[in-house]
Image 1 (cartoon, rainbow, N blue to C red):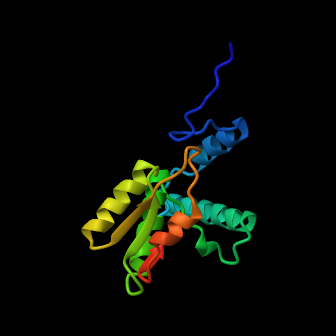
Image 2: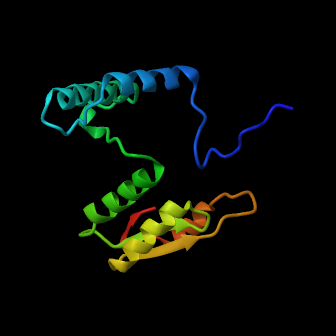
Length: 145
């Protein structure tokens, strides 16, 4: 019987061509892109090339809009905290659901410690959020849903 992989929350199987591209990049670019030497410069060039390619795929006008992170947890943390802290002068209220990933919950817990308010809405038996429930908890201080 062929196994079926269902743990996409933790990691995704890579396509063989993606694996090959990653191995090639690792072989070619041994430097830290922040280092001030030839290998670092080469790694920085490769990183900027990749940033440009991703920006093109996503139709971003400016490649600087593309931010690379180490993974999902860091991405979630950076996105939520980034929006919250950038909009602190406009409000301090965030809305979430009761079935969020642990990375979301930990980030929200940390923001609560920084005097942000968080409202959580329930989902139905299919895991769907009712927009009317979200509307009920939105306040003039809401900066992220």
